[in-house]
Image (cartoon, rainbow, N blue to C red; front, side):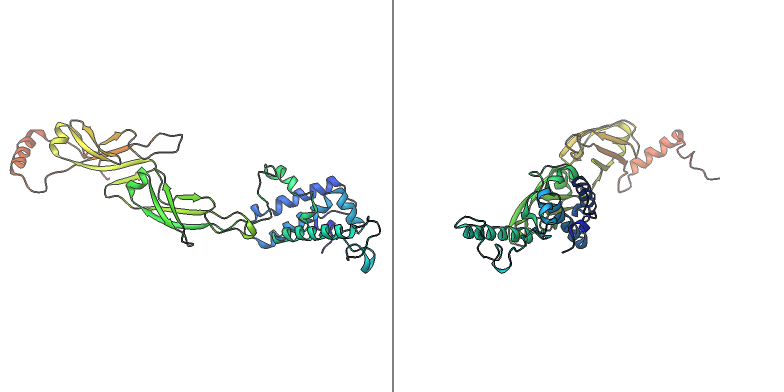
Length: 329
């Protein structure tokens, strides 16, 4: 293993404060949150953290400098083949100390193996990098998951729903590859392309790490006559000539059902009327959108002799200019 001082890029004469500063700098630069899916950087981060685990603890640093432990924090053998670590009798221990030492050594190896499974050698030696993460990333040790474990991968699923279901909200049942079924609540107002995150329903994490999430991408079908712009609903609505000329009260569809709408007397094609808060629900802090109704004056599909006679008679004295501004030089 490389020299721990070289790993932290500090001289052997560095103070504890210098070692801490060096680790902070390298931890920010190499942290997996800032370098996703980069295995080389992840390995370097583990190496730096392992080095600080020892050098950041003044007692452990002293033992390392004296050669009592190696770069992984493991006790070096003393006294040759009959030394303590080799399983021999340690004259400095009271009677029965050999068995107790063997048990402690076995436990230490188990703890060391546990941390190695998570890709972090030397973590069982105590003290160190976790204590500094609250300064680096704004969370305490208990609130932050082990930074040396990788949670399971996220899984993405796609579902398709109708326009009105997206506006009103609904539920859909999906089946995971494992055969497990989930009832997914689709919130009212969701738009096409948005995702719903189900925590912990993705791939299982390695070595007991947290599972990933399931990401449900929602695709919304187009509607026959409604269109959506932000949280507002738009509708092109045909009206008859008498309704436009004389004004009227008509029934209009909304995403909640039919409502009454007053058409002003003398309305033209293109006139837009607003139905307040008849759009889709917005964010929690906002009201619903509106529905905008664009009037389209529509003549009968078949010729009407009485209507033609009336228009010819009215047109003799009722001609008016409507295209004055539509001139190209």
